[in-house]
Image (cartoon, rainbow, N blue to C red; front, top):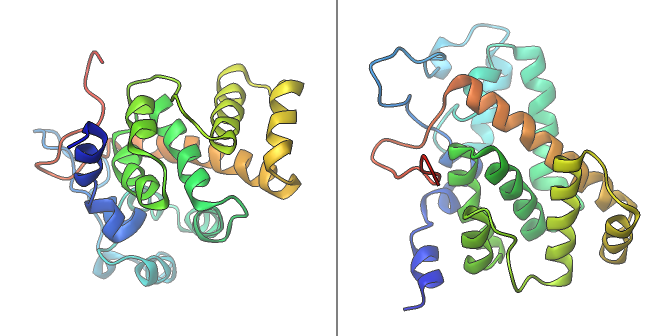
Length: 217
């Protein structure tokens, strides 16, 4: 079996339940107390409960991932939930390319949870296993289609050089309209914030699961 096929066959957890299912994670297996102990609906106060109820409508496993720390600030959490909802399920960017953009940010931040959650979703949306594997290895993926290359170069250039060159922008304009370019920029910036939230809260992958990014790699 091709190595990419083997790799793809292992990506089942997050694809089955989406972002929320993939990020309902236990605290890191260390002797330290978690910075944000996992909350349940029964523990939410009157300010947190309305947001918790909205999260539960789209979650099969509860309040996890970035929502666990975010719900501590329920007004901010609600604003971010609304943004997340748009950028995941209502965005003008095709799902495969949207998930690719999220993975680019996850790789840049070496965000264990972000990558663990979204690599299966990207594969399910049609992004090839070879592209995902090369990106995880911090390589510019080979054999990208025109729209995939446009996403990679646009997001990478914007996040690493803090600008988008005229050439890169022109390439993006060949495959995206104005709304899609705005939404692509927003999803990249949003998942920088998500990676920051996860890093601050020291969220990790589920117990017994292998972290995508190894120390020294």
